[in-house]
Length: 426
Image 1: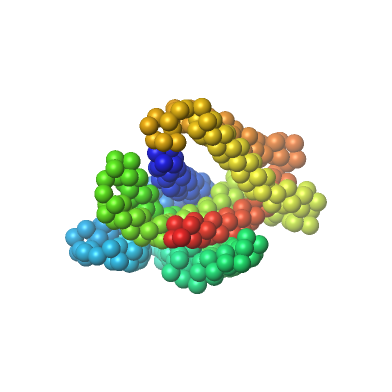
Image 2 (image 1 turned 90 degrees about the horizontal axis):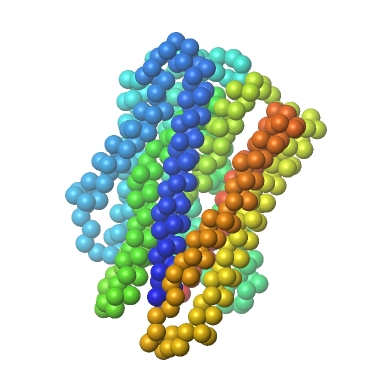
């Protein structure tokens, strides 16, 4: 039991806290860099307009202030007295932060930006007004909220999609797999339309710079999103510690109730991660083609089409490598646990202590060594393709991996989260 609780706590900290935080921080940094790269070759950089040049960073700063202000609504303005009030309160936090952020963006767009300026657009300078850039940020901000709530709808046991998957378990694994895959595929529809609309609006107003600031808008309230995402794992860890300490069942019941509310709302934060990843990838692609001098990516060119096919394959290759790594690490862990049960007298009876260090070593070594090949695949592919096959083929690879990657994560996250919700509530 202790091994299981420790593994659960470590997994929560690594996956839901450190993993999600680093993922979203990486998207934040990438979107900022993409916006700054495009701004440097636009009128902001050409005319040395320092305040306007830093507009992406100003968005991030306003987002932090808004999220700090939003916390007061949960701690001071609306006091929570019952367990059933926790989940609605967490959802309100995101809505409140989105509304406040919209107002904040309007203010800084009016103060920091000139009324009219130009943005680099594939070799040309596109004339843009400050209110258009405000709309670019706002459409990304509200698209993120929509994607978050849609993701929550497809992963919460309170709604019909997860209930249908749970009901399918009555007739065996085959129907469960079919329903689960259908849920994952169906969950893609609304988020993809939300991403497509935000890309169309932001690109129409401000080219690739608009896409980059739309991604920043989607991520601007992520401090609140991460706090909500961390709520469940922290409560679960507290429950695990209480269980190992031998405390009363009443404490565990309370932490389980808090964990259930946190798990439901955590899907919203992961929805933000999915949507922002698509916008950030497109923004980085725009920064690449702007710097590389690529004006068009013609899919009828053999080099580009080959790149598209290979790029679309890369997310599946990467996923296969990571899934196999997790499987092999889990196999080693199970074998080690079985070995300890067979060789350590009194372990089954609870009179002897297990060898925790060996289990921790297995998981730690696997987490480092097994990620080397997937990491090398991601880092070396653009270098090899660009050096040996040229910029056109690399453009195709990047475009193909962008589209394919967004679809893969949109399918598999809701599916895995729904199954996790069913497992918790069963």
